[in-house]
Amino acid sequence: MPRNLKITLAILSVAVVIGLISLRGLHQRIQNLSEAQSSEEEARRDLLKPTVSTPTDVLVQARMFWASGPDTLTPITVELPLSADPAQRGRQVLDALIANVPSDGERTLPADATVLGFYVLPDGTAIADFSDALASETPSGILSEEMAVNSIARTLENSVPILHRLKILIHGQEAETLAGHVDLTGFFDLNPQAAATPVPTPTRPSVAPGASTPSR
Amino acid sequence: MLNSARHPCVLSAARRNISAILFAVHRFLLAAIIAFAVISVPSTVWAAAWQEQSQTPAQIPAPAQAHPATPPVPQQTAPGQNPLPPPLHSGPTIVINPAHGGTDNGARGQNGQVEKDVVLIFARMLRSEFERQGYRVVMTRNDDSNPSYEDRAAVANGYRDAIFVSLHVSSTGKIGTARAYSYQFATPLAPANSADGSGTGALAGEQPTSARASGLIPWDQAQQPFMAASYRLADVLQAQLAQRFNGSPAISTRFAVRELRSVAAPAAAVELSSVSVGDPNILLAMGAPLAAAIVRGVQILRPVGSTSANSAAPAGAR
Image 1: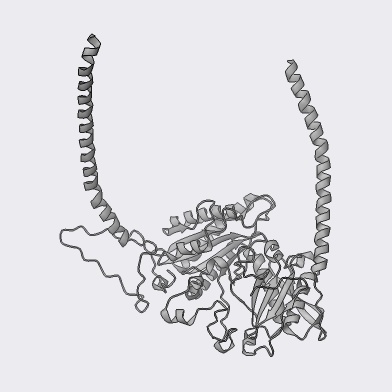
Image 2: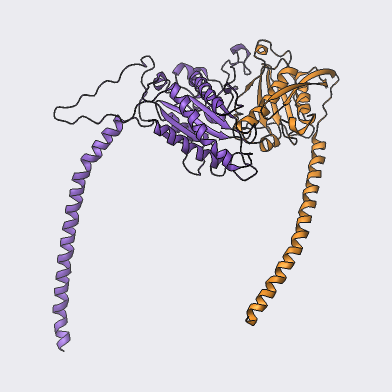
């Protein structure tokens, strides 16, 4: 074997050994980073998790629509302290829908999603403003997006009966779709009969502490 | 001395020859151009006339709504002139929309299968099946491009009698099931109850009064006049899908699927579950029954050669 080839092979072998050793270290470092990132995420979520409580809060049985299979929603009755004010009440219900899910299998909305604001217009139109995570972390597909929207709509319709229809905003803006399929430029029907009953008084928006105010 | 004396004669003779050659070539080219023009002009005129006769996108003026069943007036031809060839196709045009594409992968499976590729394969299978049955088929994309929702809708809206079928593969759902969707608009608010008090429902994205009065349909609500036809289409497709995909729902779902909203034709989206299947071949094997179900469903609604009232339906969004 020529001398040059021997030297090259030796250099290559040393490089491979060094590479393998450093790869292990690199892998460990990536793992540490991801763990740190997830704990940061948890801390952020805890920080953002709003606990809206109002003087009119009363413990009520609320029906929450969570997934009971890959393609079905089932109402589960839970006891929640809910405000008499429709905007605060809607906000509380949506917070609970995200945070109080019994298990990951029943989750319909991403764990990282937060409600940035909830408004009720005099005509019974509810405007729910979610963080970007709702759009970016909802699995892509008509079925999954339909389940996410239906989970929000059915839960609101049961817990805040005066609402007539729902508009979903993402970070204060109108989004074209939720995750590429479901149209968010329009409205979703809630209680059709609620249209005949206007909201008694215009309500002040319920905005999360530190959340950005929607431009609309 | 001898060379210098001969050079001028040789050069001038060469120049004469070159000039003669160039002149000949020039004359030949001129004759060729004239001959080409004489041949091509009549054929271009004939082709344009034939194209007007055949059913081509967008340029066709929609017939008046009041007389949807009025038969076309036969065209008079001058004596001695050959009649134009009849249209090659009658019946609905099937517009197949493979969803996503380009940078938009759609749903992604654990084994690397992406929705945009799977639906393109399904769309090609579906096109073959439709063409085998004698339907005219158009696809909104036939490569890894990603036309906008409006561009996809525009393909369907360019045909007078189209049926729009969009294909999807979900990332969730019970594997081996399929669902058909049609578009669901929100219930409009009562005028006295509208948010802005104007009664136009502008905030709701409802059709403004001026648009209703003019008979024009806003592009983003082009699906509205076709909702009943789309429900029927989705229901028939769902019935066929339920026969071939066990565990699928018996009735279709009405929901706000974005890509259907601007389509001025009966439109349905079909979604198969799901890209999360372990073996990609299992997913691809669903293509044949999917195509068979959709083609059968369309055949039930609109057999080849059938005419539809929708072909003369509102043309505002066209």
